[in-house]
Image 1 (cartoon, one colour):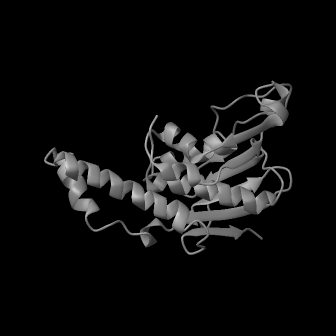
Image 2 (cartoon, rainbow, N blue to C red; image 1 turned 60 degrees about the horizontal axis):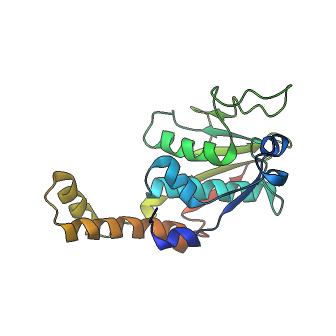
Length: 203
């Protein structure tokens, strides 16, 4: 699989999954996720997928500090409904990384490792996503202001030409480059920008 080189420069997320440890899927339960994993899940790379990946990384870092976050140990709620805008796309990426699911996840073994009912929508909360540790109750709210990372002015007309089937091979190539360059800027140039990626501890 060939993909943009910058994918490999995006920090990876290290998780501890007690279920993976228990069943021998990963030694010590240590699982590593890369942005490419989110891309494979979604089937594409875009600012929405990028923000879902990075917001989750930042939220888990804020909740766990220097210790490994526990996969399956975090409840995630969304302010919007699951069918509103890109909420579903974001939720899929968040679910991949955290293990949180609605009622479709793993049912557990002898009361342990249950991944169900850790993902919910239509929650009353100030920001788009809330991540809450099951063990301590510590929580952070999160959102991404992607509009503050504007696309190149050429991108929209090139996209329209591509969608209409009127773009030349060079124009289609240029569109793809500009599209992924915005993703690159979101994830690399603004990775530590608190005005783009908002993380707030819940009192």
